[in-house]
Length: 344
Image 1 (cartoon, helix red, strand yellow):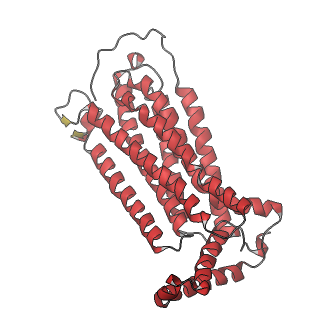
Image 2: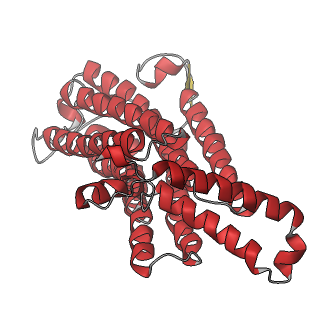
Image 3: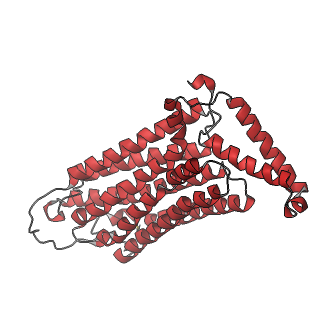
């Protein structure tokens, strides 16, 4: 961390810290509430807790850790205040906590998007689309690992990043900014992919238009996250500001909704059974729906192995089996049908 010759700010010793804390814990509370509700739906209503839920639980745990880091940054590190009024020890603590918070942000976003991709894999039957989702997951893991490793190598030794006066080799502030921008661009692209994918997938399914539009809107909520990430990325220059504790506050204020609204939006499609639950529209044959779903998948798999020629010639039985599998998957995973009688 560089030491700058700071001048007295014209607006005095103001603080944005408590406003940041209010925003932080409001969004974290909303994300936690939807995550708990999601797990309850999957355990008690649909009874199909899966890997997408496990990844979302991890994302929720890391974002709570991030909220703790931001709280410490505000209370002890001077986040939201002008650096001019901070003690050297506060600036060092802010640099260490801020470095940790960026890594937490990268990891939380990765687990959230992997959870979305795994959720989509639960309702997708097309081999090409499934391969694309696996490729997306691979890219998220690969690039997030690179970003984290770059942050771990900001300085050698690493503690020189927040301890001035040490002999060290450090990456420039411009490199730091470029890492943050690169991660933001990756996040925007993956948000758009995850939001747009359901629109194309649901278009060909034989479900009611009203249900189709509702599901597209639910699964397209990730566009909100993309907007937040775009603004956050545009404010990345604050990471190299001499008055970083003050100037970075706007970046943090957009980073918080990006991460936590992302979790809320990722949870939204899985929460549709709650609406049906309180509307008294729960179906009573979970076991029958689950059995039918499994049977359709086996029949469709068999048809693909021995009926490619029939499909090319327009065989209606094979086609209907494929569509039926996709429709059953969407219906079961989003609670259109198949919720248990004793859940009521």
